[in-house]
Length: 309
Image (cartoon, rainbow, N blue to C red; front, side):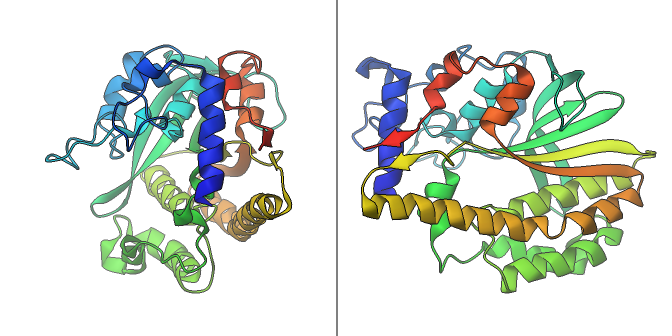
């Protein structure tokens, strides 16, 4: 798996086309991390959204809090950074327009990043993108190379112990959410393999949204939760063994996604009872680009990969 990931990063390097002076000097991070996160962004910065990332919990702009003695690069400096990928996809303006499509309402939205929603005590959900207007809220979780790492692919991967906390009633911020979410967390923790699709994070986001809208007076509010992944479905990795590797990843991801989607009806019915019309969507980044009218031959072409040697 690691070799495949390295090949992808090598291709991303080539697509970006920056000279050596823009890369991290450390032998450990050379060719996979840039010196500054601004080199990884189309606009060279985050504009009005910088504070939102600083207040997030993912060390996107700095790792000093997590590694005070030995500072490692910020996550957004990585070529594989899903946060840089997200910002390059959605931009840094105050508002964003979604054009006519068959999935979500076409109109203007206020754009923000790292939306926090309470889940259990001490553990808020941080959702990558939040688009809002008076009629509709859209939340987007964005993944890039996560499905390609050992963390997501290993068959014997143990789910983080932190997710066990979601099976304890006393931990819930909203007692009414416990009967709905506890059995589902328990199912995925004990009986399923949710790693490739990162089902637990999506469940955490849903819990956060359920708590958030339960505390508000809404009537048929349209709310969308989108899982957006970097499009890898069309990648061809030449060679028989390599081909099997990429096909295994695609298959594992699809199986994990389908298991998550089995609960769509359950969640839609539960959210309807609190006045929310919930829609769950799973899209690739090119589908998002189409909604936003992002030019595929422009800056985002750096993320387009079809063939690996």
